[in-house]
Length: 123
Image 1: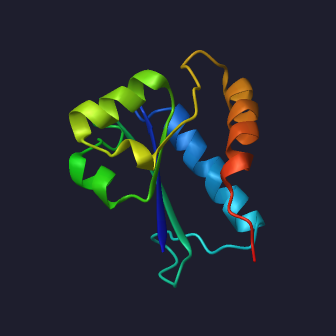
Image 2: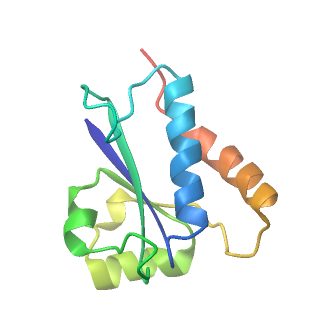
C-alpha cells in the first residue's frame, strides 16, 4: 500500500479537502483506497494533518511524516515546516502552492487541477 498525506496549517480546510478530492480521483482511476469502514486490501491510504492543528484536526508529527511515501504540502511555508520541524525528507514532499485565501469552490477547482497531475496511471 502507498501512503499519501496532505498537510496545511490547521487541518480544517485545505488538507482535508485535498485528501477527499485525491481519494475520489484514485477511486475513479480504479484503485482501492483504505478507510476504517472497509478493512480490505487497499492500494492507497490518503490522510491529512495540520502543522498547528487544534482539537478539531489531526496534528502533524514526525512519525507520521516518516511513514508516508508522498507528502503534499499545501504551500511553501508548510514545506519548510515539514522539513525543519518534522524532519520529512524533501524528496517525499510535493508543494501544491495553494495559499489559504480561496473560497470553498475556488479551492476545489484549484486542488482538482493540481492533483490530477499526481494520480498514478493504471497499467
